[in-house]
Length: 442
Image: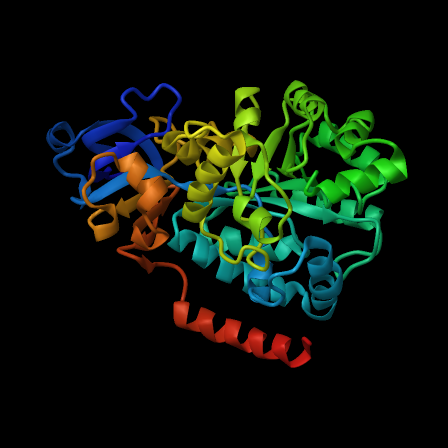
């Protein structure tokens, strides 16, 4: 198969051993969707004279961004219930709206909208926790987008299932259907300690070990959650999960939010080898608290970035999350060097791949990995001059400067145009849903 060369003046691999972190006037060589070489552009032109070339003279190349936590279909609830505290937002607005509107078609259409937004802003892989994950899997498979689908598990009935056993059974069925899929991986998604009782959590831990399934859970999202758990159970939620066997080195636990943490909590997470999925914009908007990311990273814990759903963010833009994560960490730690620009970029790429257990395939630009690549046009005034391209990307660039996106070597965004998604049809469909939702929401 013919090689494909992608040339740019700046290449940021995000690999652990990348020294220097920025390569100048380099080229990525792709064959059959994999990176087979990273070499100076002049050398690549000599070595591959018949290759197809993409010349990006004003751009930086980075790994595809990885959104480790979200609820994709909630993009159709964008703006539905803003400026409210978490439990009011959930109990009085989101859960009733979900009961009225969520269906296989709703999730399919909302997920397609979300995937279009994510690809357009440089995201090549996502993790989703929402109802009808089979519908999300269908769209991700169709588009060729990497996905981890954490099938939701709760104690109470919803439009997706009637009880915890049914949620778990549906999750296992989805896993069996997609266990050998190139892009879709299925995990278990117990919603939170306050919505899932001990018996289902014990079964989740057992199945995670038996089938090597990742687990993702909202955990220590607010101080109120921790305080309420102490009153009801006498245990902090993290300690309860440890007692139930979920916080263990033989389970890949992904802990979402983590804003109310003690030093003992951090040690427990570190000793279990669990990952933390930080959603800074959503946490700020819902006034949920501040994740101590610098302390977590210093403890050797993998910290990755997520957007959460568009109903609480209100976008799926990892450029915004990188910048917020870096700035917020500095203030929380009272240290301007707490998280630097390169670390923030790695949180959105390599660390995300590690958290999802796919770092052997993606998360950095290295020979042998798949061709998940993003090109960012740095010629805009807000990123001029380019004294430090990593700084420009994290602190100055907008996601609208993403010009090209490849997933597994396939061009998904070509000069800011989505290649596989009909955008006018997408807009019409979203408008139809909006009309329905607004007709019933008060």
